Length: 532
Image (tube, one colour):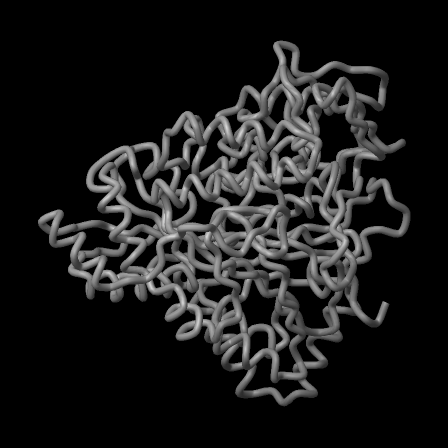
């Protein structure tokens, strides 16, 4: 057993012992004690949001977007997506930034910073620091950097000490709603980066968010404390915030009810969600769905360079059986890359191929057999779906192996080109966002399985218009084209569940905010305990 596995087991055992040895009053006392200290513990799933193996420097991390909850706590974000408590009226709000302005028919976006914003080392976040960050990110190898944006030759200029302008070589209004999913949304302290050096900065980064780093055990435990220089008076409410990686959702659930933690982000287990909803000690908040699961096919190599093989996967996939059998019909079926909680959603695509086992068997027989590996992320829901797909496809005569990967291992796998199919999520609040449709389908992106010039033109045109009806029509065309070419079957749009205990509350935890990508953007500066 590795040291890390040992820590996970220790957490599980401690939680179970605490549950067995303490009654409800003792659990409440543990939560109350932490609340009195202003200290919250957040559990993140190992292999996904609970892994940060390459550090927490946005420009250098390979998992920045997956770690967005941590990033928001350290760096704050220039902008975040907010919504009413019920998840409606979603809107972009400035956090470190005071405002933005779209000019020159969408070729220029002007960003103005708030007054007196400082990094946690006391140095100013001004226009010069912001420009440094943007230029650094554009030169960085991180896949989360906005290198797909249509930058002009001079991408950023300084207008005054608090204002910069971003320049594009064509209209790009989508930059506004996609900004929070980009690494340039999380500026780092240039002074701290120079002082610490890039290697140490990955471990103890310095941002302008509500918290600063106290200690960091990579992919295990991150301890933060209140940033004394945070720009907003009276924020953050918490004095201390701990992010803890945990090895299973069951262990996380036990830790919550034992009083050892206050938040578990991204609960997916149906039995545990039902137990939590029936447990008065836990608050369950289901977020609006924005990211459908899809079966991404590598159309650039055998066997899925043959459309017949792709069609076999469509017809062998019984989406309704998985939706109802595994998830009680909670999550809406999808036939494209959008979902009800995001922009430009259409529930159905004309001509979409649906489950037909006999057709699938006939195609496989005509191909002389079909043998593939289905990869997926090492996460409970994804692995559960992959197992169900494996069983369904075998009924159609398809020989299927399943492989699970930590999120950090996915990029090398994609870049190798040696993969057949991946069960992944696609989509975000805005389809142009990172991990949205461009990530999986545009020819120049590292996670794509498709290179199609016509599809590229549709996606570029959709991102370049201010007319929301025109954007909607173009994305609908793209969804239909993907369906016609059988590029990727879509399943359903799963919504993350936030589980909280001990009276903690705040935007994105106990209110509904559409996830920009994988999880909602928690406003950690506004999180507090009920007693406050």
